Image 1 (cartoon, rainbow, N blue to C red):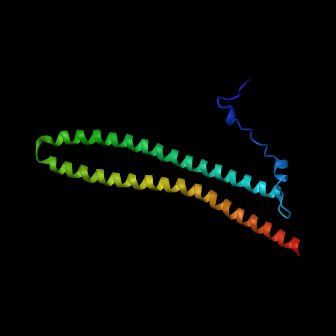
Image 2: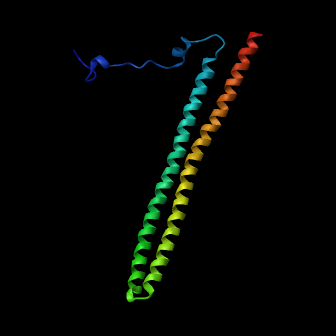
Length: 151
């Protein structure tokens, strides 16, 4: 007895989903080929949307890394500046400047990262929105063909 997998009772053979497979389920008035093409376009749109989202999030992560590097350099510069001002009266002024600059930079970076995320999601959404509009048009066309055949 030769087993193909570790669990022979669960061996499953996928059917061949070619046009012949779908012809067995044909419904009068429905163009199976057009339906298959429509579904193929849906999957292609989904893949494209995922690619757009992935590219956008790669850009987001790249920018996060750049911000981290910039922040570490700014910390080094700030520490050096505070060490120089450590002689007394300049210290509170330098600390206030540092806090103001740091908070301003943090808000700027948060806004930039949020915009990158919005762009990534927006591009993916646009792909799916366009496909949805095409799909609705395809369904309307199919409904018109069916209605025309009945007359």
